Image 1 (tube, rainbow, N blue to C red):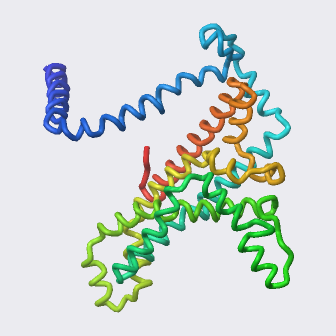
Image 2: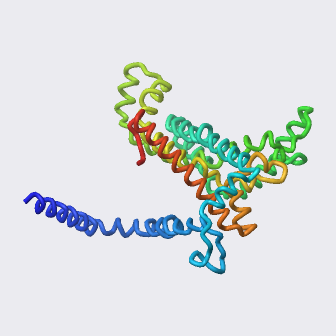
Image 3: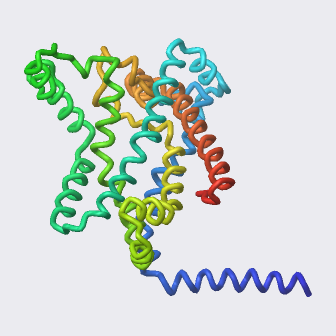
Length: 314
C-alpha cells in the first residue's frame, strides 16, 4: 500500500509539473532561447575537455588521438612561468573581489540617497555607458590618457614640474591601471542589481528610523546594508566562483612586452598556446585546471557563507 501511495504521489507531482509548464507555456517559450544558449555554448563544449588528456590531432579528431593521461598537466606545473602566471591571476582576482566588487554596492547606496531625479538620471546614464564599450576601446582610451607625450595625466605632471611616466609600460603601475579601468567600466552596470534590491525595501522602515532620530548615514548602515546583505552575499559568491576568470580581452588590451610579467594570466596564456601555437591539448589542460580551482573556491566560500550568514548559491 505504501509503495502504491508513493508511486501515485510521484505521478501526481510529474503531472502537476507538466500542467504547470503548459499553463505558463508563454514564459517557458520566452526562456527557451536562453536555455538553448547555455546548453549549446556552456554544456556541450564541456565534452571537449577530454582532449586535455590526449595528444590531440585536429585531423584525427578525438577518436583517433592518443590518450596520454596527465602529461599536459604535469608539463604545465613544471613550466618555468607557471608560478608567475598563477600569481598574476590570483592577485588580479583578489583585486576584483576586494576592490572592484564593493564599488557598485557603494555607488548604489549613494545613488539611492540622491533626491534630485534629473541629477540622478544623468549620473546613472554616465556610469552605465562604459559597460557598453569593448575592452579594446577602453584600452585605447587609457593608452591615450596615459601617453607619455600627449596624455592628459603626463601633461599635468609636466605643468607641476614632474617627469613624464610611461604608465602603460610600467610594471609598477599596470595592475592599478587595470583595476581602475575595471571599476570605471563595470561599476554602473553592476550597481543595477543592488539598486533593484534597495528599491524593494519597505519605506516605512526609513520613516520609523527617521522618527527615532537616525540620520542618513545611520539609516544606510542599519537598514539599507542589512536588507540587501543576502543579494550582496549571492553576488560575492558568484564573483569568487569566477575568481580565476580575469578575461582575455581585458588583459590583452593593456598588455605589451614591457608589462607582460605583471598581467600575464591564464586566459592570455591559453590564447598564446592554444590558438597561436596550436597546442590544443596543452591549452585545454590549463583551462581545465583554472576551472577546477574556480569551482573549488566556490564550494569553499559557499560552505563558509552558509555557516556564517546562512546564504548560499548551491
